[in-house]
Image 1 (cartoon, one colour):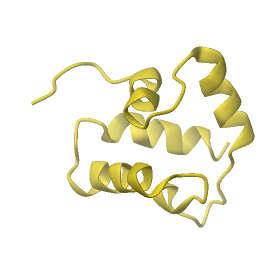
Image 2: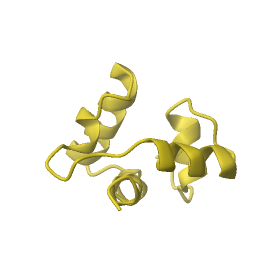
Image 3: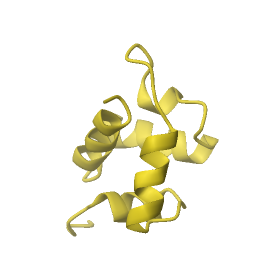
Image 4: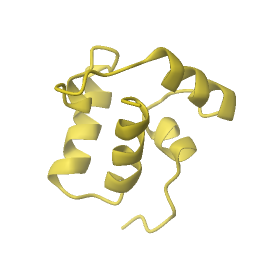
Length: 76
């Protein structure tokens, strides 16, 4: 089991995205989600990225807290 501390940077790595601070800030600024749309259904994810997010929630995985944090940031 992975017991490391997950951050936005490690989440972006896991999703195969640029995980630099600037890239994360740019991603959050450029990608917004309507309040009535689940994060995993956003049109900017690949199929595998959406599946990872969905499985994090379904399995209450170690990643769920940081996935929830990203979800909140994409809606502010």
